Image 1 (cartoon, rainbow, N blue to C red):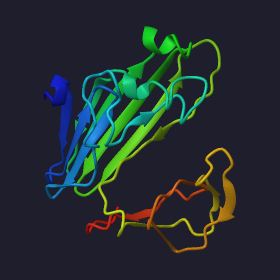
Image 2 (image 1 turned 120 degrees about the horizontal axis):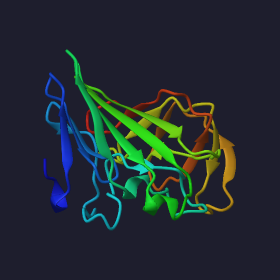
Image 3 (image 1 turned 135 degrees about the vertical axis):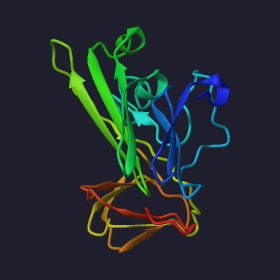
Image 4 (image 1 turned 90 degrees about the horizontal axis):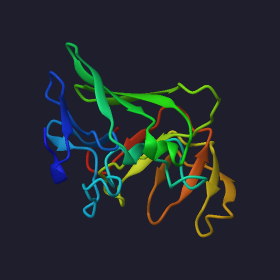
Amino acid sequence: AEGQGNLPKLVLTSPQKSEAEIYLFGGCITSWKVASKDLLFVRPDAVFNKIKPISGGVPHCFPQFGPGLIQQHGFGRNMDWSVVDSENADDSAAVTLELKDGPYSRAMWDFAFQALYKVTVGADSLSTELKITNTDNKPFSFTTALHTYFRASSAKASVRGLKGCKTLNKDPDPKNPIEGKEDRDEVTFPGFLDCVYLDAPNELQFDNGLGDKI
């Protein structure tokens, strides 16, 4: 399908009609709808021109999360991914995208690699799996993340499952975070928050304040 800015996109639909939209530029999921309700958010000022990454949905951070030796969050969100596989089951639909090194990536990170990104849509679920393979003859290290934007009411949203985690509070000084420990069962967002949670569990519950728990 053709998306905004005439960029190619995929529409992945489960048998129960849940739906995800994925742009090949950046391998970015921009929409995930359950019962026609979109649970993801794309910024109003997002551009779809391949000059900047798509600001919203589920962008990739690869091979670097945050600032560092190469551009912020790496180049995975600035390159075209390709479709290598798709599958349908009774309760889900899935597609696998691939990203390989090229002149653009090698100019800033001189390694050969293959990234396989599988996206699966179920009746009321969205799951992702990212596999990185070193296809070079020398070792490399990397960091990665999915920088997810959820649609939410900040005044009502909350997260459960972080109690007991060590924290690094980057507000007001990101360069000198304050160490602490989360003692709340439910983390809320009454104002600006920039906090890192260390050793967080694999599963958290996010209440978007709009009637959905993810």
